Length: 250
Ligand code: FES
Image 1 (cartoon, rainbow, N blue to C red):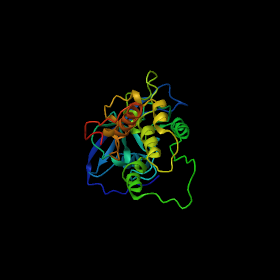
Image 2 (cartoon, rainbow, N blue to C red):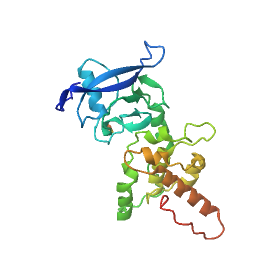
Image 3 (cartoon, protein in one colour):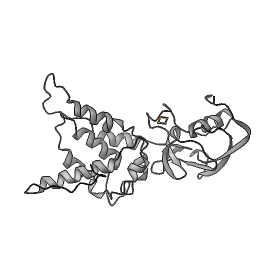
Image 4 (cartoon, helix red, strand yellow):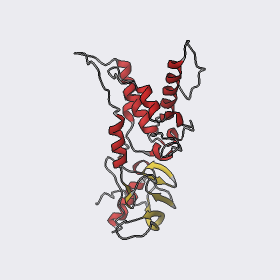
């Protein structure tokens, strides 16, 4: 891997980068190692890791698009889930793998559980009777473009959510709720998404909005959860009801 093409601004200046290393085949437990990286004001964490590869430090990590599109480079940076390709390197940064999955090696985690759950959720529109020549209305295309199809499934929100990965709550997590909202907002979708969202644990969401805080695309899964919960409650009411406006939920 040789991708390190940034000009080194000051050959004397160095950043220290701490990485939690672990090879399940040879190490009993994870351990921290520190590395020196040249100071480059625009260097991202991914570029720093690539630089270290070029120096023979083979730290395992995932990357693909390098432009916040594939979601593969999510990791804990100073304890916060972030995309390594979207984070500028700073001195004394600490890199760890996401904590809620098995570590395959160093910063690479096993994402099979995520893929399996995505299949289970069936977040694509499930159509009962697809009409011929159906045209998707422009407002739906707009909502998809601005919200629903922007999720890159990086799992940062899953890492930040206190209610998911919690046996007591049985909440799938914010990313899945957002994807369910995507399906629910498609005019061809014929599944009862409100019931499905309830079954997948949206009532356990504590509305902390941590998912929105860490989303690299500025999406707000908690907002979609709130909309699902409002719809579920409204459906169960015997009379019309108007909710007070709250800009966090609009
Ligand atoms: S490498 Fe694709 S999102 Fe970071």
